[in-house]
Amino acid sequence: GIQVEQSPPDLILQEGANSTLRCNFSDSVNNLQWFHQNPWGQLINLFYIPSGTKQNGRLSATTVATERYSLLYISSSQTTDSGVYFCAVNTGGGNKLTFGTGTQLKVEL
Amino acid sequence: NAGVTQTPKFQVLKTGQSMTLQCAQDMNHNSMYWYRQDPGMGLRLIYYSASEGTTDKGEVPNGYNVSRLNKREFSLRLESAAPSQTSVYFCASRGDDWTRGYSPLHFGNGTRLTVT
Image (tube, rainbow over all chains, first blue to last red; front, side, top):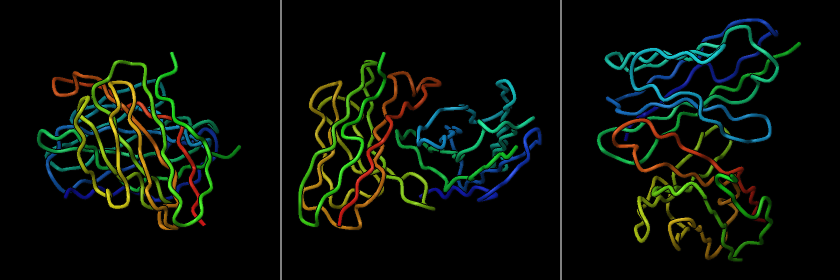
C-alpha cells in the first residue's frame, strides 16, 4: 500500500514563530487532507488539498502532486496550535484514507 | 448538531472480555469508518462502511467485527479482548459527494480502551 511519511516528528516553537511541516507519499493520490489533533484528542479537518495551494487564516498548504509531497505552513504560531498534525491520502477510486504518523507540535510562550 | 458521537469515552476490559463500541452520526452520511490510534503509528483503518448494509476490511481488521445497523449507526465489537487492542478508537463519517469533490472526514471524540 501507499506509504505516508511526515517530518519532522517533533517540533517546539516559540509563540510567534513560523513553521513548515512536510508530508511525503509514495504513490499518486487523488485525495490529500491535513488534520489537527488538539491536546484533548479531537481531530479537526484543516485542508483538502490534492494539488495546488490553499490558505485559511494563519495556515496554508501546498501540494505538489507530481513530486509527491505536501507542505503545511503555520505562521505566527500560537499556543492553541499545539497538538499533532496528520496528513492523510488515498489513491485510485478508493474510499479509505491512509494516515501518516504525524508531527507533534508544541508552541511555548 | 452533535456530529459524530461515540460511546463510551473510556473503558477498561480484562483479557477475554467482549464489548461493543457505539458510533452514531446525525449528518446523513453514507460512509462511516473505525480507526485505531496507537503512539507513533498515526491512525490505522480497522473497518469501514460505504453505505448501509455494506462493510469492508481496512488495514487492521483482525480481532474486530462491525455492524452497520442503519445509516446513522456503525458499531465495533471486540469478541475476546487482548492487550494488543489497548488503543484509542475513533469513529468517523463522510458525506456522499466525496467522489465528485471535497467532503471532509468528521471524527468523533474517541474511546480510550485499556485491556489488562
